[in-house]
Image (cartoon, rainbow, N blue to C red):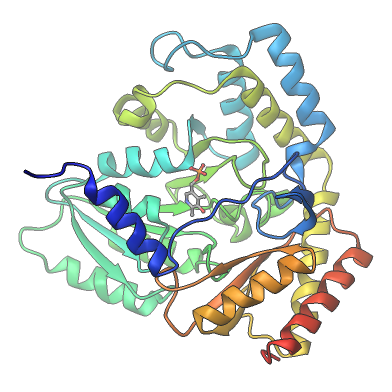
Length: 397
Ligand SMILES: *Cc1c(COP(=O)(O)O)cnc(C)c1O
């Protein structure tokens, strides 16, 4: 007789054997650069809360006030009765902030990619994707009937080759969609979006950028990668992002033309069939935009810390790969070494995660540091000192 559930423990045990299982660490308190993690006071350098906005007083006050005026839940999906004045206000504010005609929010960033990409391209179309794009893009692409082509990471010559080949496809493709991450989450490098947009323009292709890690980080006042390259939404037609990283709350979104927004909300099942954000989340996100517009010091401090840290670790001899952003990998080689490095740092009071095969190539295991605006220079220097000592102990430097 077949056992219907034995695969659950078998496959789990297999992951444990290969050390590929996730062991959860618990924060006792808010997401902050200084936190109690599993009962230990540590500096957290593996959160996406780059600017420390998760605990910003203006966001917290806005959330509390919205609970008083609007309650804790929205009660429905957006198209039924789940659209509140707060949701409309957030989208107006976001569009203004991004300099786009329109903006639309989704429950999460993952739901933008998995719900919108399959609507933008289908049978008879081509999706062209960077080889290191985020898993949510990969899943979105898997849900389409479009042909797919992968280009080498950030290699615009290879992208041009793929687009040239696509010109000769018979029958001619109806639509071509180019998708790239803005900032790549494992290496912290930036997509050459200006060149990608230029190639898109030359080939009549639509350009879709996932700027999850670039928002609140790149561009004027943290406006993101489209602003960073001085582009507009005629050149990059879909600017996608999330409020779950530097904005400190949660929620996916797109910015672009009015017709994009209308198309997206009428077609994406993840938008139509999943409930809208609770009022405190929406109000806190509006406050996050207020903060980005009126308190430039957070983005400035993030970059000050990023530059100081990167220079220091490089001077010590660490390999930071292609990093150009507050995502700074310290590449050590073997998986076991990366794990040991992270364990020792945790014992010394620094919480960072090892990133190992299959997330990165076998010989490129690393710990990934995500810099935070809230660290003072003294705190940063003490982090650097600890990393130096541990790196020497493990003969990484
Ligand atoms: C985090 C992330 C997402 C998912 O965003 P959520 O709002 O957390 O679902 C999508 N794309 C990229 C590149 C990301 O880093």
